[in-house]
Length: 121
Image (cartoon, rainbow, N blue to C red; front, side, top):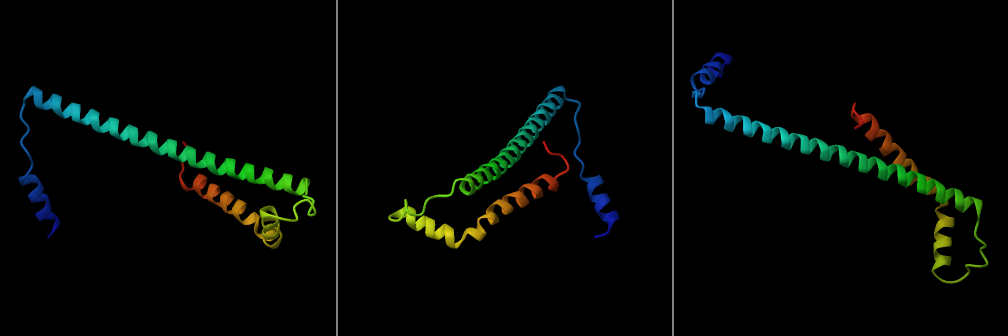
């Protein structure tokens, strides 16, 4: 179809608006309802975005504090020689070089979220 065909179809099929006062009131009421829905969706998006950012920031802070405390107060290996704590210690000793990866992932995610949209809140 050409643009002229589309224009003619739109012009020919436009609805006739009556000068009925109730019709105008109903349209205005529906428009207010639509605006209310749009405002609620925008509010929920802001709330979700703030919750996501707070979760990432608190995770970064708590992870950094936990790592700082772990390096500041190292555990005595003789005290945890048996049981599940020993298994956890062995696991952490073998993979301690990868402990910073989750923190770096959270920091990168936070940076992407903050830079992605122009408006923060």
